[in-house]
Image 1 (cartoon, rainbow, N blue to C red):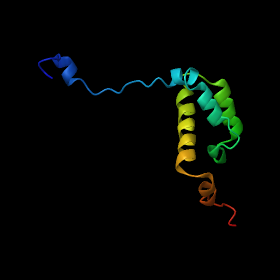
Image 2: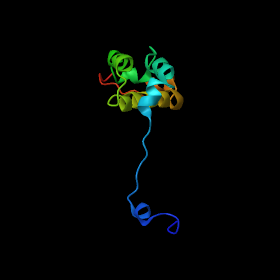
Image 3: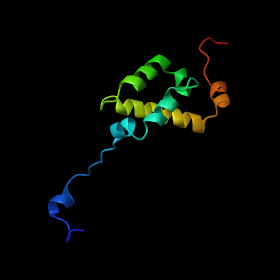
Amino acid sequence: MNPYLPQKIVTRPKNGFPVPITAWLSQELTSDIQSVLLDPGLSIGEFIRLNKIEEIVKTERDNRSAPLIWALYTLEVYLKLAIPKKEFYSTSISITGK
């Protein structure tokens, strides 16, 4: 590559690339994200208050909240695909000792 690229480019540190999460949330994936995260049978609702998830999904669409919404969405999709609901509940930890 050295004969074709300037030395400045060849020797610069690696760089990541931006992921357009905010654009995805406000355009292409809006309905998918809302249908997944506003579902009453939300798996992550066992760990996170549903009203807070609903508040974030319905009101927040800025650069700050986009990574959180994306993380909640991907976690929920993962839980739905990887762990069947019945198995998910049978492996839950009881804190009451019963």
